[in-house]
Length: 284
Image (cartoon, rainbow, N blue to C red):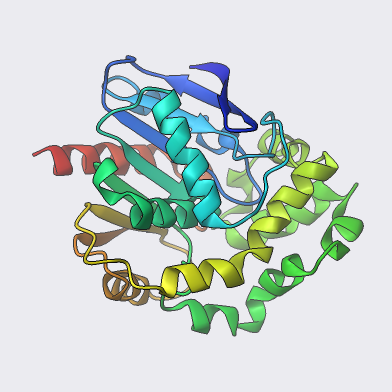
């Protein structure tokens, strides 16, 4: 695996990359509060027959520039440009958490340009069970992060402690996310513009929901896999049904064993195996 940077519009996107340049492409998108380091343990496992690219999302970690918005349609456009800049073909896009919301936006924008898509451990704004999730008082941070400026003021300088709260309660076993990884994630949001970029993802949820509720222009027949960790709360069937009703006509689901919300950290071997199997399934 190597690191590099790619210029996309007015953003400098830092990427981790591995695999033969002419192999089918796999784009891995992290979520909050992580960086591309989330995929450190699976990139090389998947790179024997794929060209794997894992970016720090715009404004996060080693990526430079101030994103214009946290709206997922905008970020999806940037990731589509990244796919083109990296010369990826036969692309599967796999996104965790906010990264999965970006994948959904990519599916709605240009589904024919994706060979497959994987959405992991996330609810999609405007797509069932969105209303149920945002009304859950245990999901308090969605509303808090959407407040202008206040989250930055309270979290700045305390990123590691704040992020630890989420790693500890959302992982099946908090020890599966070691101190080294937690330090790396905290550093990825330590710049003021990085912390703001992460909270802006939440501030955009209202606009994301409006965009996702609009008619998609017909069924989306790109193969889609929805994954959740075995210890995640909520019924996976509710998420699968919501995605089907949102127009994904070829979506199925699966569970990653021995994992909570952060499967790439908690059970990387199982996640890598399932992503590799998805490639085989859509190629058959």
